[in-house]
Length: 310
Length: 194
Image 1 (cartoon, rainbow over the protein chains, first blue to last red):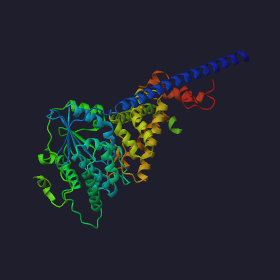
Image 2 (image 1 turned 45 degrees about the horizontal axis):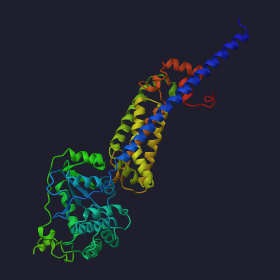
Image 3 (image 1 turned 60 degrees about the vertical axis):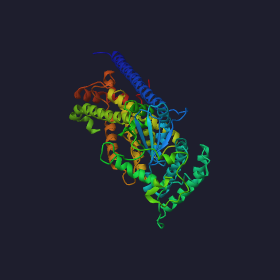
Image 4 (image 1 turned 180 degrees about the vertical axis):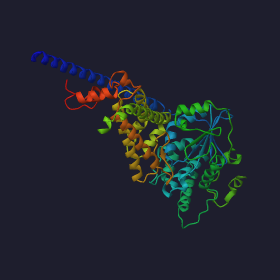
Protein backbone atom coordinates (compact mmCIF):
# COMPACT_ATOMS: atom_id res chain seq x y z
CA UNK A 1 0.00 0.00 0.00
CA UNK A 2 1.77 3.15 -1.11
CA UNK A 3 0.71 6.51 0.14
CA UNK A 4 -0.80 9.15 -2.02
CA UNK A 5 2.07 11.63 -1.90
CA UNK A 6 4.84 9.43 -3.42
CA UNK A 7 2.47 8.51 -6.21
CA UNK A 8 1.74 12.18 -6.81
CA UNK A 9 5.46 12.87 -6.81
CA UNK A 10 5.99 10.11 -9.34
CA UNK A 11 3.27 11.54 -11.51
CA UNK A 12 4.76 14.98 -11.26
CA UNK A 13 8.15 13.61 -12.19
CA UNK A 14 6.65 11.76 -15.11
CA UNK A 15 4.82 14.87 -16.26
CA UNK A 16 8.00 16.89 -15.89
CA UNK A 17 9.96 14.35 -17.92
CA UNK A 18 7.31 14.43 -20.59
CA UNK A 19 7.39 18.20 -20.72
CA UNK A 20 11.15 18.12 -20.96
CA UNK A 21 10.97 15.61 -23.76
CA UNK A 22 8.49 17.76 -25.63
CA UNK A 23 10.63 20.82 -25.15
CA UNK A 24 13.65 18.97 -26.53
CA UNK A 25 11.64 17.82 -29.50
CA UNK A 26 10.52 21.38 -30.09
CA UNK A 27 14.05 22.70 -29.96
CA UNK A 28 15.11 19.98 -32.34
CA UNK A 29 12.31 20.88 -34.69
CA UNK A 30 13.21 24.56 -34.58
CA UNK A 31 16.85 23.70 -35.31
CA UNK A 32 15.87 21.45 -38.20
CA UNK A 33 13.51 23.99 -39.71
CA UNK A 34 16.18 26.64 -39.22
CA UNK A 35 18.70 24.51 -41.09
CA UNK A 36 16.21 23.90 -43.90
CA UNK A 37 15.43 27.62 -44.19
CA UNK A 38 19.14 28.38 -44.27
CA UNK A 39 19.67 25.90 -47.09
CA UNK A 40 16.79 27.39 -49.09
CA UNK A 41 18.02 30.94 -48.60
CA UNK A 42 21.61 30.07 -49.48
CA UNK A 43 20.75 28.07 -52.57
CA UNK A 44 18.08 30.45 -53.88
CA UNK A 45 20.24 33.48 -53.14
CA UNK A 46 23.21 31.82 -54.79
CA UNK A 47 21.10 31.06 -57.84
CA UNK A 48 20.00 34.66 -58.05
CA UNK A 49 23.56 35.96 -57.86
CA UNK A 50 24.71 33.40 -60.41
CA UNK A 51 21.94 34.50 -62.77
CA UNK A 52 22.65 38.20 -62.32
CA UNK A 53 26.26 37.59 -63.23
CA UNK A 54 25.25 35.73 -66.32
CA UNK A 55 23.87 38.84 -67.95
CA UNK A 56 26.45 39.53 -70.59
CA UNK A 57 28.23 42.83 -70.45
CA UNK A 58 27.90 45.57 -73.00
CA UNK A 59 30.72 45.77 -75.45
CA UNK A 60 32.25 49.20 -75.65
CA UNK A 61 35.15 48.60 -78.01
CA UNK A 62 35.24 49.07 -81.77
CA UNK A 63 32.86 46.80 -83.62
CA UNK A 64 34.19 44.35 -86.16
CA UNK A 65 33.40 45.30 -89.76
CA UNK A 66 29.85 44.47 -90.84
CA UNK A 67 29.41 43.20 -94.36
CA UNK A 68 26.04 43.07 -96.06
CA UNK A 69 25.33 39.74 -97.77
CA UNK A 70 23.41 38.96 -100.94
CA UNK A 71 20.40 37.71 -99.03
CA UNK A 72 20.21 40.85 -96.90
CA UNK A 73 21.87 39.31 -93.87
CA UNK A 74 24.92 40.88 -92.26
CA UNK A 75 28.22 39.29 -91.35
CA UNK A 76 30.04 40.93 -88.47
CA UNK A 77 33.62 39.68 -88.35
CA UNK A 78 37.20 40.70 -88.64
CA UNK A 79 38.46 40.45 -92.17
CA UNK A 80 39.76 36.94 -92.92
CA UNK A 81 38.85 35.76 -89.43
CA UNK A 82 39.47 32.05 -88.94
CA UNK A 83 36.74 31.34 -86.46
CA UNK A 84 33.47 29.46 -85.96
CA UNK A 85 30.42 30.89 -87.69
CA UNK A 86 27.70 31.94 -85.28
CA UNK A 87 24.40 32.35 -87.11
CA UNK A 88 21.80 34.33 -85.21
CA UNK A 89 18.23 34.15 -86.52
CA UNK A 90 16.05 36.78 -84.96
CA UNK A 91 12.76 38.55 -85.48
CA UNK A 92 12.71 42.13 -84.21
CA UNK A 93 9.21 41.60 -82.86
CA UNK A 94 10.02 38.45 -80.89
CA UNK A 95 10.30 39.05 -77.13
CA UNK A 96 12.64 36.12 -76.57
CA UNK A 97 14.94 37.57 -79.23
CA UNK A 98 15.08 40.84 -77.33
CA UNK A 99 16.00 38.88 -74.21
CA UNK A 100 18.67 37.03 -76.12
CA UNK A 101 20.08 40.31 -77.40
CA UNK A 102 19.90 41.78 -73.95
CA UNK A 103 22.12 39.02 -72.64
CA UNK A 104 24.36 38.32 -75.56
CA UNK A 105 24.57 41.24 -77.99
CA UNK A 106 27.70 42.42 -76.18
CA UNK A 107 29.15 38.92 -76.12
CA UNK A 108 28.67 38.54 -79.87
CA UNK A 109 30.16 41.95 -80.60
CA UNK A 110 33.16 41.14 -78.47
CA UNK A 111 33.70 37.69 -79.99
CA UNK A 112 33.55 39.24 -83.44
CA UNK A 113 35.82 42.14 -82.58
CA UNK A 114 38.43 39.78 -81.11
CA UNK A 115 38.32 37.54 -84.18
CA UNK A 116 36.93 34.68 -82.09
CA UNK A 117 33.74 34.36 -84.11
CA UNK A 118 32.23 35.16 -87.46
CA UNK A 119 28.85 36.48 -86.42
CA UNK A 120 26.19 36.09 -89.08
CA UNK A 121 23.14 38.17 -88.22
CA UNK A 122 20.12 36.91 -90.13
CA UNK A 123 16.88 38.79 -89.77
CA UNK A 124 13.71 36.80 -90.31
CA UNK A 125 10.06 37.55 -89.74
CA UNK A 126 8.17 34.75 -88.06
CA UNK A 127 5.47 37.19 -87.04
CA UNK A 128 4.77 38.33 -90.59
CA UNK A 129 2.49 35.39 -91.20
CA UNK A 130 0.85 35.33 -87.79
CA UNK A 131 -0.80 38.59 -87.00
CA UNK A 132 -1.30 41.89 -88.79
CA UNK A 133 -0.20 44.15 -85.93
CA UNK A 134 2.82 42.20 -84.73
CA UNK A 135 3.59 41.14 -88.29
CA UNK A 136 3.65 44.70 -89.57
CA UNK A 137 5.85 45.76 -86.66
CA UNK A 138 8.20 42.91 -87.40
CA UNK A 139 8.42 43.67 -91.12
CA UNK A 140 8.84 47.43 -90.67
CA UNK A 141 11.71 46.84 -88.27
CA UNK A 142 13.30 44.21 -90.50
CA UNK A 143 13.13 46.48 -93.55
CA UNK A 144 14.51 49.44 -91.61
CA UNK A 145 17.38 47.36 -90.23
CA UNK A 146 18.10 46.19 -93.75
CA UNK A 147 18.13 49.80 -94.89
CA UNK A 148 20.51 50.61 -92.05
CA UNK A 149 22.77 47.84 -93.35
CA UNK A 150 23.07 49.83 -96.59
CA UNK A 151 24.76 52.44 -94.44
CA UNK A 152 26.89 49.93 -92.50
CA UNK A 153 24.97 50.57 -89.31
CA UNK A 154 23.00 47.35 -89.00
CA UNK A 155 24.47 46.32 -85.64
CA UNK A 156 24.14 49.74 -84.00
CA UNK A 157 20.66 50.19 -85.42
CA UNK A 158 19.50 46.75 -84.28
CA UNK A 159 20.42 47.60 -80.73
CA UNK A 160 18.01 50.52 -80.78
CA UNK A 161 15.29 48.34 -82.27
CA UNK A 162 15.67 45.75 -79.52
CA UNK A 163 15.61 48.45 -76.95
CA UNK A 164 12.32 49.81 -78.26
CA UNK A 165 10.56 46.57 -79.07
CA UNK A 166 6.79 47.12 -78.96
CA UNK A 167 4.43 44.58 -77.43
CA UNK A 168 2.78 42.06 -79.70
CA UNK A 169 -0.59 43.70 -79.69
CA UNK A 170 0.31 47.34 -80.10
CA UNK A 171 1.54 49.20 -83.14
CA UNK A 172 5.19 50.05 -82.84
CA UNK A 173 8.33 50.52 -84.92
CA UNK A 174 6.52 53.36 -86.68
CA UNK A 175 8.35 55.17 -89.53
CA UNK A 176 8.98 58.37 -87.55
CA UNK A 177 10.73 56.42 -84.79
CA UNK A 178 12.57 54.21 -87.24
CA UNK A 179 13.97 57.28 -88.97
CA UNK A 180 14.84 59.02 -85.70
CA UNK A 181 16.77 55.97 -84.50
CA UNK A 182 18.61 56.00 -87.79
CA UNK A 183 19.74 59.54 -87.08
CA UNK A 184 20.76 58.42 -83.58
CA UNK A 185 23.25 56.00 -85.06
CA UNK A 186 24.48 58.51 -87.62
CA UNK A 187 22.38 57.70 -90.66
CA UNK A 188 21.24 61.03 -92.02
CA UNK A 189 21.11 60.16 -95.70
CA UNK A 190 17.65 61.00 -97.04
CA UNK A 191 17.61 57.65 -98.85
CA UNK A 192 17.24 55.92 -95.51
CA UNK A 193 14.14 57.86 -94.53
CA UNK A 194 12.66 57.42 -97.99
CA UNK A 195 13.28 53.72 -97.86
CA UNK A 196 11.65 53.41 -94.45
CA UNK A 197 8.58 55.23 -95.73
CA UNK A 198 8.28 53.27 -98.95
CA UNK A 199 8.68 49.92 -97.18
CA UNK A 200 6.14 50.93 -94.53
CA UNK A 201 3.57 51.81 -97.18
CA UNK A 202 4.21 48.52 -98.85
CA UNK A 203 3.66 46.69 -95.57
CA UNK A 204 0.40 48.51 -95.06
CA UNK A 205 -0.82 47.30 -98.42
CA UNK A 206 0.59 43.83 -97.76
CA UNK A 207 -1.81 43.45 -94.83
CA UNK A 208 -4.71 45.02 -96.71
CA UNK A 209 -6.57 42.07 -98.19
CA UNK A 210 -8.36 44.21 -100.73
CA UNK A 211 -5.15 45.23 -102.50
CA UNK A 212 -2.81 43.12 -104.57
CA UNK A 213 0.67 44.08 -103.71
CA UNK A 214 3.88 43.54 -105.61
CA UNK A 215 6.76 43.15 -103.19
CA UNK A 216 9.31 42.79 -105.95
CA UNK A 217 12.70 44.20 -105.00
CA UNK A 218 11.59 45.40 -101.61
CA UNK A 219 13.33 44.63 -98.37
CA UNK A 220 10.06 43.16 -97.18
CA UNK A 221 10.32 40.57 -99.91
CA UNK A 222 13.93 39.97 -98.98
CA UNK A 223 13.15 39.21 -95.35
CA UNK A 224 10.19 37.01 -96.30
CA UNK A 225 12.46 35.05 -98.61
CA UNK A 226 15.09 34.81 -95.92
CA UNK A 227 12.44 33.46 -93.56
CA UNK A 228 11.32 30.85 -96.06
CA UNK A 229 14.86 29.80 -96.86
CA UNK A 230 15.86 29.10 -93.29
CA UNK A 231 13.28 26.34 -93.20
CA UNK A 232 14.96 24.80 -96.24
CA UNK A 233 18.37 25.17 -94.70
CA UNK A 234 17.38 23.59 -91.41
CA UNK A 235 14.32 21.53 -92.31
CA UNK A 236 11.74 20.38 -89.78
CA UNK A 237 12.49 16.95 -88.42
CA UNK A 238 16.25 17.29 -88.66
CA UNK A 239 18.32 17.48 -85.51
CA UNK A 240 19.08 21.14 -86.16
CA UNK A 241 15.58 22.04 -87.34
CA UNK A 242 14.72 25.72 -87.25
CA UNK A 243 11.74 25.95 -84.94
CA UNK A 244 11.44 29.64 -84.20
CA UNK A 245 13.31 32.69 -83.10
CA UNK A 246 15.75 33.29 -81.67
CA UNK A 247 17.85 30.42 -82.92
CA UNK A 248 21.61 30.31 -82.88
CA UNK A 249 23.73 27.91 -84.89
CA UNK A 250 27.44 27.44 -84.42
CA UNK A 251 28.84 26.01 -87.66
CA UNK A 252 25.34 24.83 -88.52
CA UNK A 253 24.75 23.12 -85.20
CA UNK A 254 21.81 24.44 -83.27
CA UNK A 255 22.45 25.60 -79.74
CA UNK A 256 20.07 24.79 -76.91
CA UNK A 257 19.25 27.00 -73.99
CA UNK A 258 22.93 27.70 -73.43
CA UNK A 259 22.55 30.35 -76.11
CA UNK A 260 20.76 32.47 -73.51
CA UNK A 261 23.75 32.49 -71.26
CA UNK A 262 26.81 34.51 -71.99
CA UNK A 263 28.90 31.72 -70.49
CA UNK A 264 27.06 29.11 -72.56
CA UNK A 265 27.39 30.97 -75.85
CA UNK A 266 31.03 31.72 -75.30
CA UNK A 267 31.68 28.10 -74.37
CA UNK A 268 29.96 26.81 -77.52
CA UNK A 269 32.04 29.14 -79.68
CA UNK A 270 35.29 28.21 -77.97
CA UNK A 271 34.59 24.52 -78.49
CA UNK A 272 33.92 24.90 -82.22
CA UNK A 273 36.29 24.78 -85.18
CA UNK A 274 36.68 27.60 -87.67
CA UNK A 275 33.97 27.67 -90.30
CA UNK A 276 32.78 29.75 -93.21
CA UNK A 277 29.52 31.47 -94.04
CA UNK A 278 27.14 30.07 -96.63
CA UNK A 279 26.39 33.45 -98.17
CA UNK A 280 28.32 35.80 -100.41
CA UNK A 281 28.81 39.48 -99.74
CA UNK A 282 26.52 41.78 -101.62
CA UNK A 283 27.87 42.27 -105.16
CA UNK A 284 30.90 44.52 -105.42
CA UNK A 285 29.00 47.20 -107.28
CA UNK A 286 26.59 47.46 -104.43
CA UNK A 287 29.14 47.77 -101.68
CA UNK A 288 31.50 50.25 -103.32
CA UNK A 289 30.05 53.54 -102.21
CA UNK A 290 27.10 52.66 -104.28
CA UNK A 291 24.47 51.19 -102.00
CA UNK A 292 21.43 49.65 -103.62
CA UNK A 293 19.27 52.50 -104.80
CA UNK A 294 16.44 52.90 -102.35
CA UNK A 295 14.43 54.93 -104.81
CA UNK A 296 14.32 52.15 -107.26
CA UNK A 297 10.79 51.16 -108.16
CA UNK A 298 10.05 47.69 -106.86
CA UNK A 299 8.94 46.30 -110.19
CA UNK A 300 11.72 44.11 -111.43
CA UNK A 301 10.74 41.00 -109.49
CA UNK A 302 13.68 38.62 -109.20
CA UNK A 303 16.04 40.92 -110.97
CA UNK A 304 17.02 42.90 -107.89
CA UNK A 305 20.63 41.78 -108.15
CA UNK A 306 20.92 42.39 -111.85
CA UNK A 307 19.70 45.93 -111.66
CA UNK A 308 22.79 46.83 -109.71
CA UNK A 309 25.11 46.14 -112.64
CA UNK A 310 26.45 49.28 -114.16
CA UNK B 1 -8.20 9.67 -39.55
CA UNK B 2 -9.13 6.08 -40.06
CA UNK B 3 -6.31 5.35 -42.46
CA UNK B 4 -3.74 5.98 -39.77
CA UNK B 5 -5.05 3.22 -37.62
CA UNK B 6 -4.76 0.59 -40.33
CA UNK B 7 -1.72 -1.57 -39.57
CA UNK B 8 -1.03 -2.14 -43.27
CA UNK B 9 -0.88 1.59 -43.89
CA UNK B 10 1.35 2.05 -40.88
CA UNK B 11 3.80 -0.37 -42.41
CA UNK B 12 3.60 1.01 -45.92
CA UNK B 13 3.39 4.71 -45.13
CA UNK B 14 7.10 5.43 -44.49
CA UNK B 15 7.95 3.81 -47.80
CA UNK B 16 5.16 5.58 -49.63
CA UNK B 17 6.43 8.86 -48.22
CA UNK B 18 9.98 7.96 -49.16
CA UNK B 19 8.89 7.31 -52.74
CA UNK B 20 6.89 10.55 -52.87
CA UNK B 21 9.88 12.43 -51.47
CA UNK B 22 12.27 11.00 -54.01
CA UNK B 23 9.86 11.48 -56.92
CA UNK B 24 9.32 15.13 -56.02
CA UNK B 25 13.05 15.63 -55.49
CA UNK B 26 13.67 14.25 -58.97
CA UNK B 27 11.04 16.43 -60.61
CA UNK B 28 12.04 19.61 -58.80
CA UNK B 29 15.73 18.94 -59.31
CA UNK B 30 15.23 18.38 -63.01
CA UNK B 31 12.98 21.43 -63.35
CA UNK B 32 15.46 23.59 -61.49
CA UNK B 33 18.55 22.40 -63.31
CA UNK B 34 16.91 22.75 -66.71
CA UNK B 35 16.30 26.42 -65.99
CA UNK B 36 19.25 27.48 -63.90
CA UNK B 37 21.67 27.23 -66.82
CA UNK B 38 19.73 29.78 -68.84
CA UNK B 39 18.38 32.43 -66.49
CA UNK B 40 16.93 34.56 -69.29
CA UNK B 41 14.76 31.70 -70.45
CA UNK B 42 13.46 31.36 -66.96
CA UNK B 43 12.63 35.07 -66.84
CA UNK B 44 10.90 34.79 -70.21
CA UNK B 45 8.86 31.89 -68.93
CA UNK B 46 7.72 33.97 -65.99
CA UNK B 47 7.07 37.04 -68.16
CA UNK B 48 5.00 35.00 -70.55
CA UNK B 49 2.34 34.57 -67.86
CA UNK B 50 1.90 38.37 -67.84
CA UNK B 51 1.13 38.30 -64.14
CA UNK B 52 4.12 40.12 -62.66
CA UNK B 53 5.75 43.50 -63.36
CA UNK B 54 9.04 43.10 -65.25
CA UNK B 55 11.35 43.69 -62.28
CA UNK B 56 9.54 41.14 -60.17
CA UNK B 57 9.40 38.67 -63.05
CA UNK B 58 13.16 38.98 -63.31
CA UNK B 59 13.68 38.27 -59.62
CA UNK B 60 11.31 35.31 -59.71
CA UNK B 61 12.84 34.02 -62.93
CA UNK B 62 16.31 34.21 -61.46
CA UNK B 63 15.41 32.75 -58.07
CA UNK B 64 12.82 30.10 -58.84
CA UNK B 65 15.14 27.53 -60.48
CA UNK B 66 17.53 27.60 -57.53
CA UNK B 67 14.59 27.51 -55.14
CA UNK B 68 13.35 24.36 -56.84
CA UNK B 69 16.81 22.85 -56.53
CA UNK B 70 16.89 23.75 -52.83
CA UNK B 71 13.55 22.03 -52.26
CA UNK B 72 14.81 19.01 -54.19
CA UNK B 73 17.92 18.82 -52.00
CA UNK B 74 15.85 19.06 -48.82
CA UNK B 75 13.42 16.39 -50.00
CA UNK B 76 16.34 14.17 -50.90
CA UNK B 77 17.89 14.70 -47.48
CA UNK B 78 14.56 14.40 -45.73
CA UNK B 79 15.20 17.49 -43.68
CA UNK B 80 12.20 19.29 -42.20
CA UNK B 81 10.20 16.95 -44.37
CA UNK B 82 6.74 18.08 -43.33
CA UNK B 83 7.44 21.75 -43.95
CA UNK B 84 9.30 21.20 -47.17
CA UNK B 85 6.39 19.03 -48.29
CA UNK B 86 3.99 21.85 -47.43
CA UNK B 87 6.12 24.40 -49.27
CA UNK B 88 6.30 22.11 -52.29
CA UNK B 89 2.54 21.69 -52.22
CA UNK B 90 2.08 25.47 -52.09
CA UNK B 91 4.52 25.94 -54.96
CA UNK B 92 2.69 23.38 -57.07
CA UNK B 93 -0.66 25.02 -56.29
CA UNK B 94 0.80 28.37 -57.35
CA UNK B 95 2.05 26.81 -60.61
CA UNK B 96 -1.35 25.27 -61.17
CA UNK B 97 -3.07 28.60 -60.58
CA UNK B 98 -0.68 30.30 -62.99
CA UNK B 99 -1.41 27.81 -65.74
CA UNK B 100 -5.16 27.98 -65.18
CA UNK B 101 -4.96 31.77 -65.30
CA UNK B 102 -2.94 31.75 -68.52
CA UNK B 103 -5.41 29.34 -70.05
CA UNK B 104 -8.40 31.38 -68.90
CA UNK B 105 -6.93 34.57 -70.34
CA UNK B 106 -6.40 32.86 -73.66
CA UNK B 107 -2.63 33.27 -73.61
CA UNK B 108 -0.72 31.00 -75.89
CA UNK B 109 2.33 30.06 -73.88
CA UNK B 110 4.47 27.16 -72.89
CA UNK B 111 4.15 26.50 -69.17
CA UNK B 112 7.91 26.91 -68.83
CA UNK B 113 7.95 24.07 -66.35
CA UNK B 114 11.11 22.43 -67.60
CA UNK B 115 13.37 24.97 -69.14
CA UNK B 116 11.53 26.20 -72.20
CA UNK B 117 8.69 28.66 -71.75
CA UNK B 118 7.53 31.76 -73.54
CA UNK B 119 5.03 32.26 -76.30
CA UNK B 120 4.03 29.44 -78.59
CA UNK B 121 2.08 29.73 -81.85
CA UNK B 122 -1.65 30.18 -81.26
CA UNK B 123 -3.45 26.87 -80.83
CA UNK B 124 -0.32 24.98 -79.92
CA UNK B 125 -0.40 25.69 -76.21
CA UNK B 126 -0.90 22.57 -74.15
CA UNK B 127 -2.37 23.32 -70.75
CA UNK B 128 -3.91 19.97 -69.88
CA UNK B 129 -0.65 18.04 -69.56
CA UNK B 130 1.07 20.45 -67.17
CA UNK B 131 -2.13 20.81 -65.15
CA UNK B 132 -2.57 17.07 -64.66
CA UNK B 133 1.12 16.77 -63.91
CA UNK B 134 0.97 19.53 -61.32
CA UNK B 135 -2.09 18.04 -59.67
CA UNK B 136 -0.18 14.78 -59.33
CA UNK B 137 2.69 16.68 -57.72
CA UNK B 138 0.30 18.41 -55.31
CA UNK B 139 -0.91 14.96 -54.30
CA UNK B 140 2.63 13.68 -53.72
CA UNK B 141 3.55 16.80 -51.77
CA UNK B 142 0.37 16.36 -49.73
CA UNK B 143 1.44 12.83 -48.77
CA UNK B 144 4.85 14.10 -47.69
CA UNK B 145 3.26 16.90 -45.71
CA UNK B 146 0.65 14.78 -43.91
CA UNK B 147 2.87 11.75 -43.26
CA UNK B 148 6.41 13.11 -43.04
CA UNK B 149 7.87 10.04 -41.32
CA UNK B 150 10.07 8.14 -43.75
CA UNK B 151 13.25 6.07 -43.71
CA UNK B 152 16.55 7.39 -45.02
CA UNK B 153 15.80 10.87 -43.81
CA UNK B 154 17.78 13.44 -41.90
CA UNK B 155 14.72 14.02 -39.74
CA UNK B 156 14.83 10.45 -38.58
CA UNK B 157 18.57 10.55 -38.04
CA UNK B 158 18.03 13.55 -35.78
CA UNK B 159 15.25 11.71 -34.00
CA UNK B 160 12.46 13.97 -35.14
CA UNK B 161 10.15 11.25 -36.38
CA UNK B 162 11.44 8.15 -34.57
CA UNK B 163 10.92 4.91 -36.39
CA UNK B 164 8.33 2.92 -34.50
CA UNK B 165 6.86 -0.46 -34.98
CA UNK B 166 3.15 -0.21 -35.75
CA UNK B 167 2.25 -1.66 -32.38
CA UNK B 168 4.41 0.82 -30.46
CA UNK B 169 2.91 3.55 -32.42
CA UNK B 170 -0.58 2.35 -31.82
CA UNK B 171 0.12 1.95 -28.14
CA UNK B 172 1.68 5.35 -27.72
CA UNK B 173 -1.15 6.96 -29.52
CA UNK B 174 -3.75 5.26 -27.41
CA UNK B 175 -2.01 6.14 -24.16
CA UNK B 176 -0.60 9.59 -24.79
CA UNK B 177 -3.06 10.37 -27.47
CA UNK B 178 -0.15 12.07 -29.03
CA UNK B 179 3.33 10.79 -29.59
CA UNK B 180 6.39 12.90 -30.07
CA UNK B 181 6.21 12.91 -33.77
CA UNK B 182 2.65 14.02 -34.09
CA UNK B 183 2.63 16.11 -30.97
CA UNK B 184 5.32 18.45 -32.10
CA UNK B 185 4.72 18.46 -35.76
CA UNK B 186 1.02 19.15 -35.73
CA UNK B 187 1.43 21.99 -33.26
CA UNK B 188 -1.68 21.17 -31.34
CA UNK B 189 -2.95 23.91 -29.13
CA UNK B 190 -1.16 23.80 -25.82
CA UNK B 191 1.78 21.78 -27.06
CA UNK B 192 3.75 24.84 -28.00
CA UNK B 193 3.92 26.42 -24.55
CA UNK B 194 7.16 25.76 -22.66
